[in-house]
Length: 265
Image 1 (cartoon, rainbow, N blue to C red):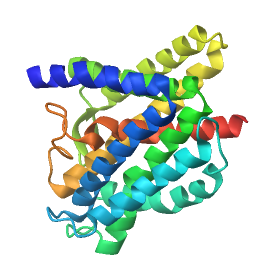
Image 2: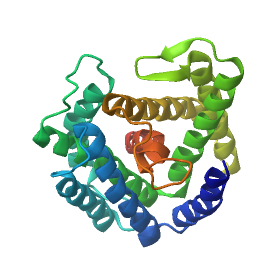
Image 3: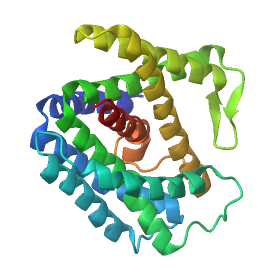
Image 4: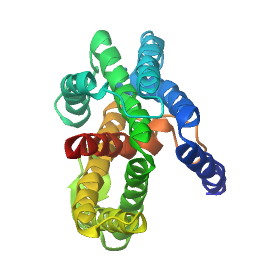
């Protein structure tokens, strides 16, 4: 517990400082997370401790993140259109392997695992870089709603959780906890909108969608770990596990926020 608290006490201020400063600081932090997270992802996807394709995947995933920063800089760019087609092709591949209980325990073939590791987390981290270029509010929305969802789901699930949500993927998650997470995430989105002087009622609904996306992201990573027989994705963060363990929910929620903003024009 002491290691967990110390890691949070150091990591959260650094994370928030990079988030508020934006630009190269945020992109650099995301690039580091992408590098480590892709190696973790390759290990989970292949089920191997040796990573013959891991560094190739990490190099290409970091290329996606670097491209997102170069194209967007401090303002939104046009890279999201082709990237959305990549997401449409690659994300189901990761989700199928993570969540479908009857897939082979041998893992994906090497090439497929490499492509999947590039998409997860590289594609999602690239969207987080692009989201900061959209503005501070949308990235804060994704981060705070995700944190509120995780916190609400944990405490409600621990207090009153009875009905298992998806025991084959994540035995400890409950319907009650998921509901608590949705409520907490929606309320935080509403409060954040009020703080920024925006009408609260549409953001209550947007918060619900973003909160649901965050929980899907958590389930995907839980499924990957369960398939690989791993407790954590890595050991980078004492008491917290790896990069994927900490950012799995934000990967999906941040990407959803990015496209919600694109849709809203």
